[in-house]
Length: 270
Image 1: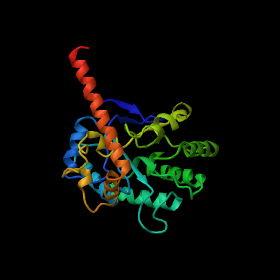
Image 2: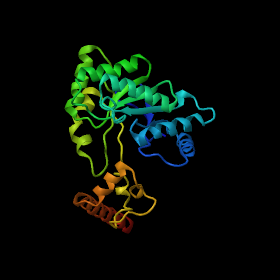
Image 3: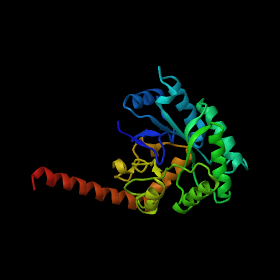
Image 4: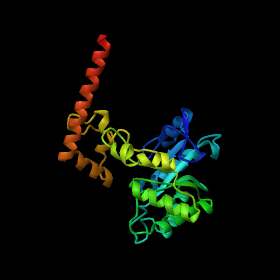
């Protein structure tokens, strides 16, 4: 397994991480296998399965014999914590209370990276930066990052942190795959050199679309999109059957044909 420094920090993470957007069976065995293969980075969020993903991951890690806290890196995210007036967003109140709840579910004293899961245009940036730094100062997190933030807001957070002498975000967590490339390859381009911004990308297979298993326009059983009564999956499934979803499938079919043709040419020695 290859390990890389995360952004402008001394924290080393495996180039592959194990996420948990929805929960899955045999979590302990999957975590055990990941650790054996050298994966040291595990990613969750307060919104993943309503917090159950954090509970399952925490239990799975505690079940691993001889596992030390220094052996793994945990990142979690706060933004969507519930339906109450202050249960979502990046106010200092929710960042603090959301992080406390995350740690309780994970049964950990701290997380390595605490993410602002989405930008919050309603909370002043100085409050956001101070809130995440407060969690770091209290030992609840070691670093912080952003997820799906536009470049100009990341620059603003960096500027506020510099002006106040506080810790800036070290990483961004955007969606990145063959269907979603512009943000990582264009919008953030200036941030890599200017701030040494790190990336922890998600959805490399576009929720399974890029595997080709949905190319026939139907949803096979036992796939992610076949899950019922899950609000996010319901939205993805509706998107799959939309005009945009059909265009994506056609694009993937074209890519698959191109790959097969390239392999055929290579095997023929041409």
